[in-house]
Length: 137
Image (cartoon, rainbow, N blue to C red):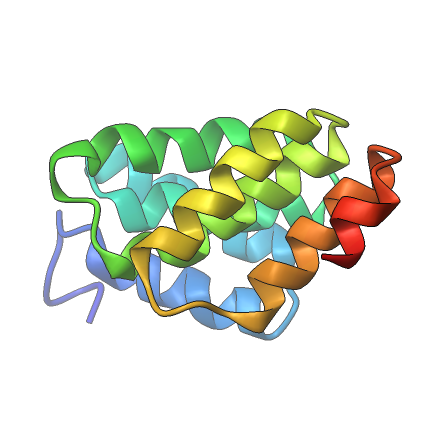
């Protein structure tokens, strides 16, 4: 596909996704970077780059990539981007920015039907903040 669609960012994006699923983060990052060099404005490319950074424990860089997704999709925030908001909440929690994490978790909850994992993340964040009673609620 990459040979037939030269200049298109989708083949390297798909190849990178396959490497990500196979847990080959170095090759995945290489293909995602190539895809981004072709198309800087595709939010999916930035989302996948954020996942790579998160899995490499580079939470600040992951948060920046996820925030870029939100910037690119600001006028069309739909339920498709709920995982990005959820992942951004995780990054903020890992960076001990608990209020921001709660903000993104709440946004994730409002974008789709309530997810148990999001409620668990909210409770865990409140627990980390020392708000045990709120965490239990």
